[in-house]
Figure 1 (cartoon, rainbow, N blue to C red):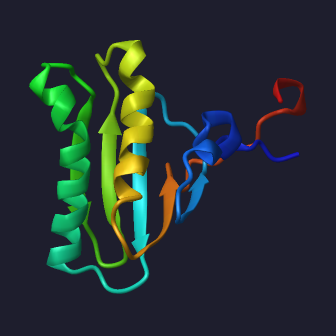
Figure 2: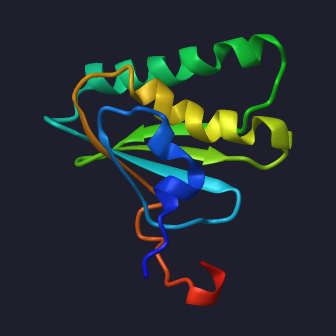
Length: 127
């Protein structure tokens, strides 16, 4: 039986227009591999960066730490790295889901894979 990370994390309730997959957990860090319908351009990179930044701006203004973020572009994807170290637990889901919600405001996203390649089998007794 495969563990349903999407349902477990509540991503299925976000109403996202693009496909989403989560391969597993890597502690307090999340890697979002963003795949586009077309080529990665500087304009699309900037649009994604702006969408994520604007989502978190109200938290920054209130001096609420939502984690360390880094956004970088590669040939085939845009990678968003989130490290939740030292984030108040009440804001962890805001950060995790906030990136997905921000991406939902950007057209042309085909899919997002969280923690790509981090999959492992969970024994049935834990499911």
